[in-house]
Length: 112
Length: 111
Image (tube, rainbow over all chains, first blue to last red; front, side, top):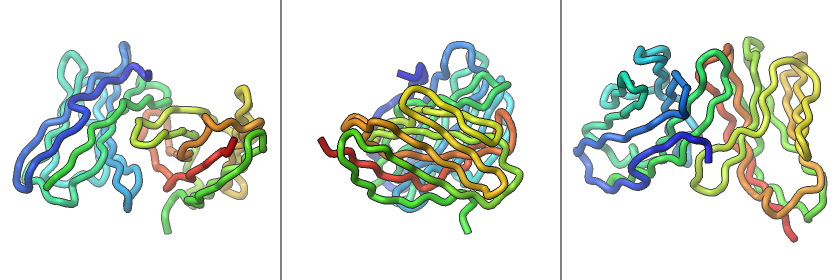
């Protein structure tokens, strides 16, 4: 158990819908990262927050957004969902001054 | 060309074998190198984290980095069926930065 929690474990929804994925980092970690894992693209970095501020952005679609709250948990919002958004979404956290990132168990999103 | 390349396998070995997993990368700016293990549909688990060229050992695992040839390796000694998983190498430019992952190598250790 990495100490990073993610909810829900599974999400099944329809095209065009909007969903919110939640992540709680390890105690004491200030950085939260979001990654998407699909069969064809592998693990891809989406976005990073550090202590509430956006720090880095990867190949995140405009339909996707994220935020980190004062209690350091983070939410990833996915809207206007398409079939191709079906994937595993992982959250990771780190202390912030070292780059050892610890991953949560992931949320499996299925868009029908 | 992908920034980090891995042979996807699958790689099948008998129990007790020494396993060698490899990655190559193209960007000489990478400074930090990691190996993660991922069991089917689970979150990646950090195995090794290295910065400099050379070897780093942790139990049955040894990570090797050769920055001059942009080549990183993970060796698993006395492999066990429980080592059956996908192994992902990951690189990054700086501390606290995004990880660039290889595609992963699927390993199967047969009893």
